[in-house]
Image (cartoon, rainbow, N blue to C red; front, side, top):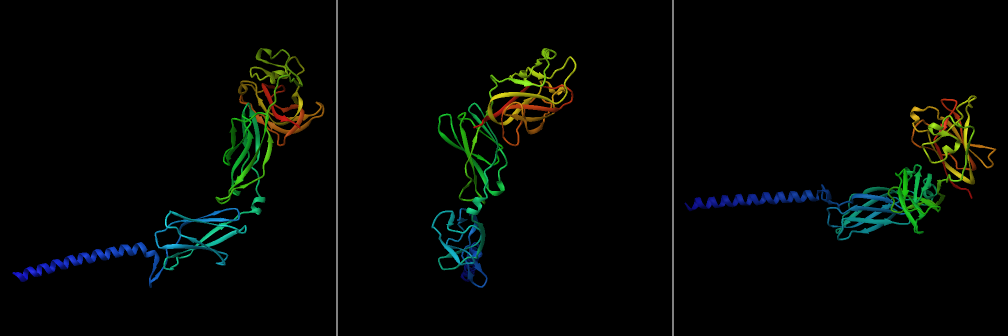
Length: 384
């Protein structure tokens, strides 16, 4: 009986011992899997390599950063370049999730870096190749300021319309420096994806200047273009100015609100200019509307509004030329445009700023021999 009990105890002990052995093996296997990236068959041990590295460009410098890896024994990293001829050591701090180093005094060009780590026993990691590029005077010389298509104010509101920014070249934002209504110089920044930007506290009559900031390759350093100064254009006041035309309907259109040239320059959309209608003879194209601005202006655009209900009226002109003159006799053509028959205001800007005292709309074609226009408004700024 005692022998039977002893056999049962021995068997029980064997089972317990087997279970302990299995657990130990499993634990070792799990531990091995945690460090298998650091161990190579044959017994060679590697330190944990840099994890998720990021290379950021800069002004004749570069920043390299990476996440702290799983190998707690890594104590040092070394970054090599120029085929290992140059290097910098990076001590690994005891805490923190990210390791970072800035390498200064680099010539402006592309680089290939090699990142290597070392543990407390001198074991090194597998090399990690990193590509980066520094920027400097050569890049700076190629930068262009984002063009302004138009800048115009209405009261204390300044609206800037932008041309395309050189985003592929690294354009990031455009800074606008202006004087606000409290006479304080203020800076606002506008992203390169904005087609137009509004400033609500602009001091009327003041100039502003702007520049474009570039950050190539997510650069840690900004690059700026030089400042460009601009005069803000605005609506030229109509009070006291007299519009004239090649002809007008003296009486035949009065019942409809139509008549002399002044009806197209009165800020009243219920009135309109109409060329001579009856009696015969009726003048044919070209037709024109003109105004003496009394001062010399740089004209930036003109806004035209067709006769109300233009979708049902087909006697507005369709093609016209913006003309300017300094004496009201000799005229210069600045640009040719197409006017669409619709009720909404339409804006037309010459390719180049047009300097003039006398402004003229020279209509060259339309669907009928006579024509009309509800309103025209000229925008610009006084010429120096």
